[in-house]
Length: 282
Image (tube, rainbow, N blue to C red; front, top):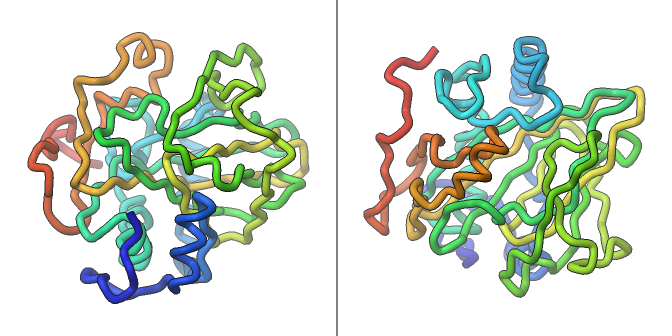
């Protein structure tokens, strides 16, 4: 799926051929490019605002931050998040990995408070995503410094290779950010790589790549801003959403998510860019 440097049409070729090859082989990539200080400061301001205005929802991901008034979680947010989610350099890197026609279908915040922020169970993102074919890339940006001590992201390298979702089951523990985990016999945790990142650094990873994070028991907060992109050669099928999962996991209600074409055109011709957008955005 990777697009060579010379093929980038929408902007700058920020990834080297070696970085692209690493992403294809390992299923994830921490690029050399990072957000500049002014964007990091904005991201931190927006994250703290989201945390302060949605205190009852912080044990779960806050999703669709860039579309105020959306019906997924009824959260308080601002369209300023779109400045981060559709940052031109972020899209340039995404274009090199999935092609020039790009849909943004989520911008979320994964917040773990100091002294007991919930764990993120091992999982593959694409488990419930109604994307056909299932081609999507996530970008997780460290809003604050993210190290082992405060529960940085962890990846299982090359776990995307078979393009299989694997078996997931319900996690009944209370100290998790969502109750959904990959069965332990699907991977070897000893293969995990800890991705320590300073604020403004990020990791791109495939929909099939296994990842997770521990609880944050440190005295430092941890937050990651996660964007989800898909190429327009795929169809986001709103009507394929599992109604039981939608009812039990309101934040995962993909049938309520607005799509946003952020670069190029709709190649498959099936994506509905009008559905679920609120009539007024705050």
